[in-house]
Image 1 (cartoon, one colour):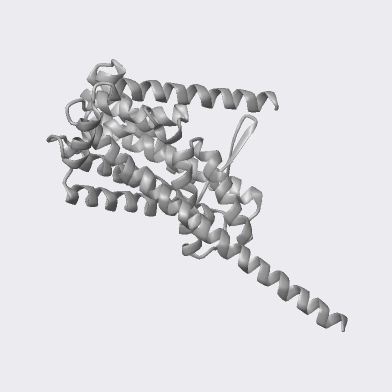
Image 2 (tube, rainbow, N blue to C red):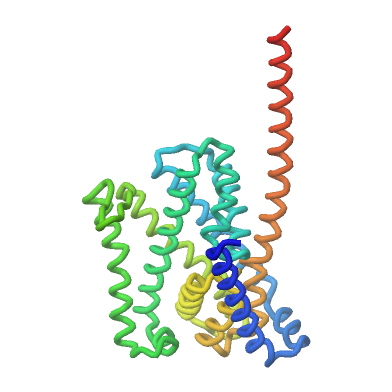
Length: 320
């Protein structure tokens, strides 16, 4: 085993240990009966609405891939893009190291449809940039609208939080400006970046921000079942939690999400609300994505076997 693999495995184990510790700290104050009662207290209508927001988020995520493929000048039917995106991300969100894990699934599907390894790598990078733009934009808005919660968690004065929020909003503006004025490759020292067209750059910012708003709305539905929580408090909680998840690469944000949300909205963040959120956004999509993966693999293998048999028959006919 290489040193790099040993280090990566060690970091993953450390992240999992941190997740288990955080979950233990959260769950130790609840009994099993309290957890079941908390989950049952969420209205069915609220859970269904949360599922709709989760579905809209995954639909939005498929637009990340669609924009990436268009920026490459390639063309694929949207049905194939949506299938690849949903399977890749529903599994990647739960496995951890989403860029690598979802990238492996993306390559398996896109390579069958004519895209090269370089194309897939560019798609992964494009989607990562879109995630970053969306998180920074929504985070900036949340810090301006709701500086109190972010300031309390980060131990910063609310006035300073608003300044950081304004600075965060400069990032998407600069990105769009570079795409508009440079229209090509941006070179910084030894690195070079291929900028998308201005229209695609603006779409990246919009779609990335909307996606995180939809996930926050899904979380908000669960938290609202236990109190009158403002929407931007849910946004602040999720943006901060997702930033911590991206930094730690804990699979599914296990423990990190619960700890951060519980700190921002301690009264409304019952364990039932957080479990219900995980079911709506992580576990149900994971089950659907795994099922679709198995079905698609069976279909691809049958088609591949049929194509091989047809090629053999043609070869035999030509030899005769």
